[in-house]
Image 1 (tube, rainbow, N blue to C red):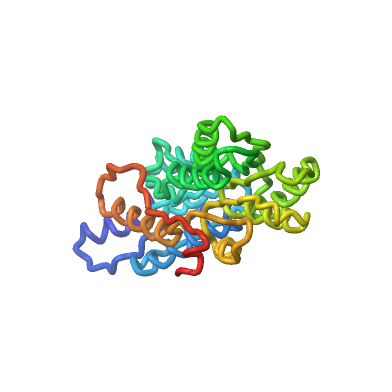
Image 2: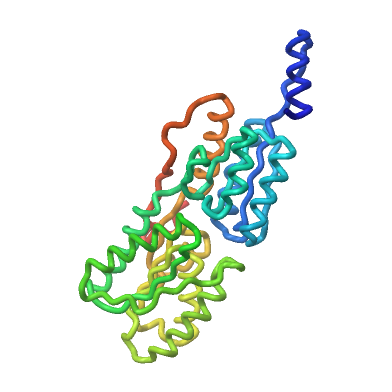
Length: 305
């Protein structure tokens, strides 16, 4: 029992009037360098301010293991709830610490786990299917495709699984390479370097027909590599997922980067905050995975707000 709960209990027992104390919520992520995570946090923060919460946003700067110790820290501080943006399977000790303390944990595009009360996210299966089918249709159901994936993070890993299934359903589509880039800086730089190497290894015009990326940063890195190699005119089709501002700009330009899927990042953050509020009000969350709608972005609507 914390000093705060002890004080409130004594006040209730003695009939003393005590002003309500703001609820304390911690958001913990190793991925704040990612634009999508920044938007999640912005949406969550805005809603937390409306709800009058004391919010602590903690970035472990790419260090997934550090999430566990930071969860232990905020549990010891007596927060009312914890929100994570990280693979729950990698932070089991932290989740158990929160469970033992009776502190609910909500995922914000995190992944599902028995110790996570609910995960608020986009439907990665649907997004991956939409962009993979876009690629397959654009190249006429045949050709060589490069995939950029990231299996260590469940929401992105699921996208790769679906894209694999879509491409596997087209006997004349070959996955030339399946690349997992370094994401410590967001993923653009290493994706560009790896795409440059792949272009050098496949110098013939038409040897690469498309790039399917599980999120926008690799798609942007691949675009930079293709343009720098002077191969933009080959018609290599690029798709991403997230539709962040840089991706929208590239799509609107009408070049190789043709499509992405816009997640409602701020909507995910706001819905995560609303889910935390429901839990703190005592509601049992039956729907353990909560999906927020998405939109396909092409040159036709890339400039839309």
